[in-house]
Image (cartoon, rainbow, N blue to C red):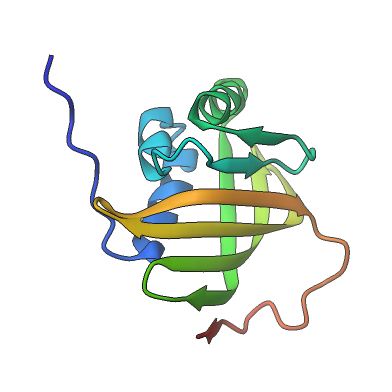
Length: 141
């Protein structure tokens, strides 16, 4: 059996777009291909559950994607980027069927390696207060 070549994400924005597209398609394999193969990857869901390692993250997303059709409408409000690391602050609204919930605040952290940019950390939680300006996109260096 030939192993598939991992996708190459030229920018952290490419990896992030693929992440949200994979969720919308309930495509677990593509979703997991966006994560770094580092064993120290971390994902914290809005419930507060922190998952460490690819196996636990995969199982969690498998359960989420198997139980519901999920669409996340994301709006990046800030971005910090260096040569090897990019941090995105994102406001998310979840759509489950016809019901829209949110907003949620997510921080997605990407690192650049041999296969381009990969997700190494995602932390998502309920938004306690409205953002100063949700339509403003800032890039900080």
